[in-house]
Image (cartoon, rainbow, N blue to C red; front, side, top):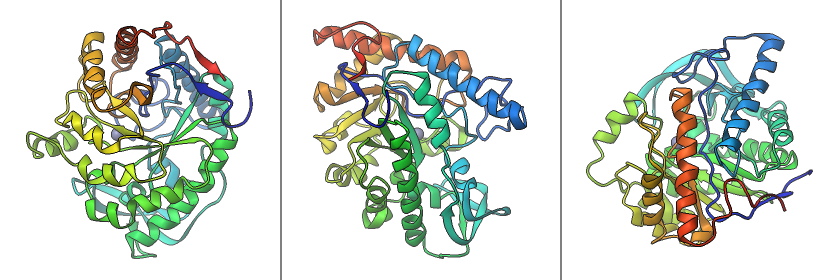
Length: 361
Ligand code: ZN
């Protein structure tokens, strides 16, 4: 197996996860975001690889068809990428409002941004060696990147987003060459900044994904199950219709897959109709509570979605990343996800067993 596109998904309802899994306690402090590493130097490099191996092993054992790294080699889904870029000063920090929701101390853009060297490509190549299943790699989206910084150089969110889109495209092309089958951009900011999404956000995302042969995905969510997000969700009313802003634009875009929250959320299931024709990575696992879904609950969420998306375009997934959950809980949620997908596959008359039918195509 080598190069992009060497693996193909040929299971109906192939399961996947959005991004992060909890890290082992010997690698980073559990159940917190932005958790500091417990190891240093060569031990850290080796520890991260061992954690990635364990994440792959658990995903496969529990029936996940499209395998990710579980973000075991990075501290945070946005910051770790930005740390590797020139033009950003991590010593010079300012407190800004992130996603219009909570204050955080963030680094400052002090000059032209550029990518010194590949950021995740070696990690992706390592993931490629660990499995024959299709692999997915997540990058932050341009709008979400600028929302996590203070900018003293470009002084224009749009200009900085375009610079990041160019850098992301360089990285994405190299990830593809390392054998990544699906490249996902995380854009939770699309659920907050509607005017910018329309004016330049979608275009910047398409720039980041330009020219790729790998499938491309965008993940838009309501965030991890942390307090600031839960408080925000409480203000959104009985029906969460934020996706109605970005979905019609994404339906017209070059992006192949759209990832959204569904299970236990207030997102009306019929919003999926707005991305008709796209693959839908549907959140059928709640990441904001520790209770494990039953397979039947997962199946029910998938069945409701099938009213608005063709079965061959549905990818059962989690609502968001699972980094803040206890490790055992996250792993049991993977099992629930695949068991729920299996129920629906059987109903559709196409069950081929856990993990079967996925591999080198
Ligand atoms: Zn998310």
